[in-house]
Image 1 (spheres, rainbow, N blue to C red):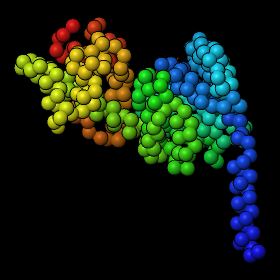
Image 2 (image 1 turned 180 degrees about the vertical axis):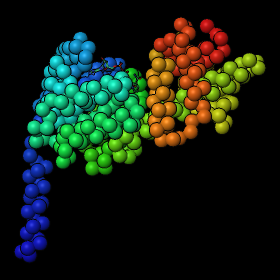
Image 3 (image 1 turned 180 degrees about the horizontal axis):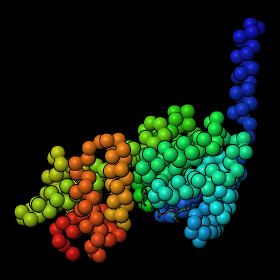
Length: 338
Ligand code: NAD
């Protein structure tokens, strides 16, 4: 046998024995069990084998305990579940840490406490997946802190903000926008597809957040423009359903006009048709708009409509009849309807 052939055969044997060896046990930590995280962690745990472990942590200890109880009582397969007393305790043995937290300061403080713990002493590489919607530069700051605490590729922090809302989180149909090096995409996809149905790789770390914020900026503006155009038509005496039908086969068509139409009764399944309940909360839209504006400022990108849009959402949310509703409730404020 020629030397090259021998080496090739050895490689094949090694590869075969690798692929048939038993799967290594995986430890996960899930931190932040609010509206989104609670459902995501539930889907992740249910889709992992019993040999794996998921450790849960939320500063609201009751949420972690309730979820652990729910997971254990419904357990048909699924990973083992443990409740942790801190983010650091949840992460200490984890190969993969998933965070789903409200604002940049919560993400920074959770990772500070994780990195303060004795992570550096471990030899096993670990992956941190942050699903929170925060600004790209805060995300890059955390990524840099992870790389310096866990050098030589021992720690990777990637951003995976999502869309699909609580309905998508519950059904496991979220879309994730991923900011990560190419070499990690396949591994991250396997994990995220246990909680969602689509992973869009947008580029290196931070790119997922940039894509998410650019999209939500557009949505913020389209929603207001749709509410104004619909209100205009109604004031001119047009039937709102007729107007929506015209827009939706014309150039003004967009998600707010077609799916989330802000006028009650135009789209039966829209939040507007159920008193603007459910859907994408106006407070979350305000938050995403603020983050997009911050990131635009840092990139020196001009946003001429942002300040006005921000003012519209703020004024709308200040109305008692609009607070806590879907962001299309802008129409209620604009039209002066009840
Ligand atoms: P939420 O406020 O319902 O939940 C956040 C959870 O984090 C809470 O349970 C809170 O107790 C916990 N928490 C806060 N600080 C913590 C810390 N330091 N350590 C551990 N736990 C901590 O928020 P949510 O609706 O679940 O959203 C989470 C993230 O997902 C946000 O960034 C949000 O913008 C984004 N998001 C939300 C939606 C949505 O429809 N709700 C959709 C897409 C993206």
